[in-house]
Amino acid sequence: DIQMTQSPSSLSASVGDRVTITCRASQDISNYLAWYQQKPGKVPKLLIYAASTLQSGVPSRFSGSGSGTDFTLTISSLQPEDVATYYCQKYNTAPHTFGQGTKLEIK
Amino acid sequence: EAQLVQSGAEVKEPGDSLKISCKGSGYRFTSYWIAWVRQRPGKGLEWMGIIYPGDFDIRYSPSFQGQVTISADYLINTAYLQWSSLKASDTAMYYCARLASEGLSNWFDPWGQGTLVTVSS
Image (tube, rainbow over all chains, first blue to last red; front, side, top):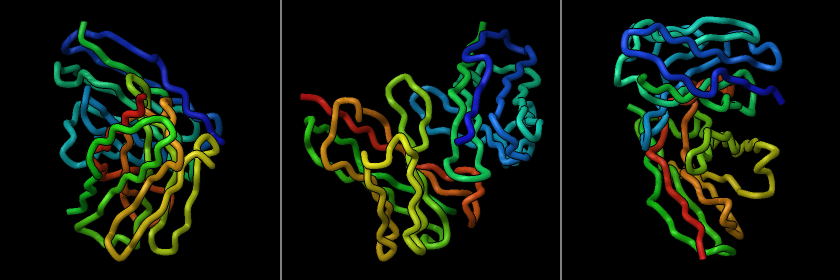
């Protein structure tokens, strides 16, 4: 099965910073990549699908890029409400494996 | 609007059996895959398996094959996740999620609210 590896596992940044999280697939998954945000005690929320398409209602400071095996999630200007754990997920075939998550905190 | 509503929290003892549910509404239940996802306390999301209620096609993660059973009843628009003998290590939040479009190659949206399963003696 294809493995999904995120980095870093955790990160601390200041309000207004540009934040980048990376996700690497162990095999080519084209653009079958989604990103989710999970705030503490909440249900995961879809942010991005097809590697770079922003889900309706998601703030434009979030963006995604990449194709093949390497992907990034970028927050252009970090806001306090962005404190959460972020997961990538591949969905080209089952199993729809998740990355291990990146916990984002405010410095 | 598509919605998934899961059954309530459960507290069980080791060795107990359990079946939790996920009821879909606002869409054609038989046309979309539904997945189950485990999240242990303080840990990440784990893909357990997936079912297509239209023809009962089921795929399991190797990690969960034989440990749980996924099923569905399309007459009442409900998917299930069940255990025959719970262990303490099954303590977790369990989410169901629908694939966003018809077909297996899709992201998850929407999600159910989660069912907390606690297994303790």
